[in-house]
Image (tube, rainbow, N blue to C red; front, side, top):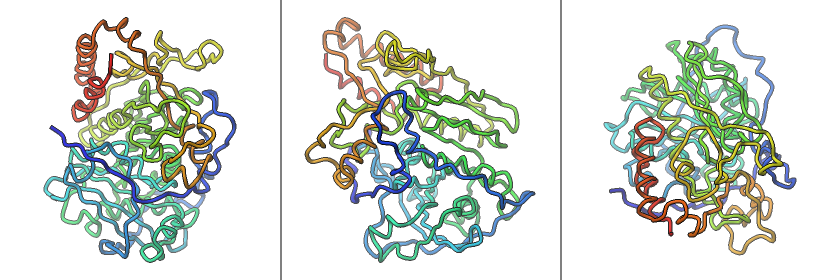
Length: 466
């Protein structure tokens, strides 16, 4: 039985330039959250022509002060944070030369406090410029339950760190154009005896990202082709960009892409699944998943939006993608292929470019009990309440209506069915629970739902009131 506790934030994250680029035009399902996404950069023209070993940067001892550490992962499932799983969070400074200029960046390592429980698998990510380690937040329960490690690398301006704690972070220095070299060098360091896993075996390491940090991942792929560890091995063994509809070029390691309802509505990649070496690819579209997690996101508590926030457990389904990617790169087990969400590209008929069922939920894609045995309709793109709500989250309070507009536009919302509608569908709570659990059993057997989230998912069903 899992214990539950509340994990709360202890800082206010400022809006960065990458977020400020978001267009604040009237939200609609026909508009992608493009300004929040990848800061597209020109392809690097200074990469070596042939595979080249990177120089290992230097790593400090663990940073323990002065003052508090910048908390980049406050939005986790209640009671299922690092303490529950016996995980340690350690911060280091790493220094080297990238793009011909010196840098000092921050690296956060989350791993079992008991090193003997480490699985040997590592999830790496470039920290989102908003100050969040979203790839870890979105997969934290699965990652920690499995004994995997998570590594977060700062590749954008450290200004918000310095603003929060200049005494601790004043020496950080990261400039534009250095991200690829930093990701390669820090990644190689993680696999070396000079890194934080010294004395342990890192079998495989994958890189993930979401939205803007998926853009950082995609921009890194040309560098991935040529950068190697000092012993001439690949640095990253697979990739998982999420919350992006970009068409991603072929790469020489497995890649699983997870667009959400926001991207399916606006920008669907046409690339096809493949098991061919050099083209190993899966596209996973989970029906019901929004661009950001609105269930546990501390920036959305209390709800600053017009509609009720979606409580769809994004984490449970992003973790399915990571589970299959790690098996692919570590054990050579090719993931199952999946249907894609069906499109009619007609907003006039029902307000969506997707084909919707009789309950208003997406048809096709990877299924889950929330849309197959539904109690609500899940819709991409919420709207900020005006005027701004009283007593908003620290983030919204600091950034006003802009912050609310940003977060609401990127979140999904739900329209719960009435008790009358629920009784017409299921007759009784008992019958609903029977059908819901039976569908969950089927999806677990098919590899589309992970048992570690079973209690959470069934708890959602048990909370439904008829």
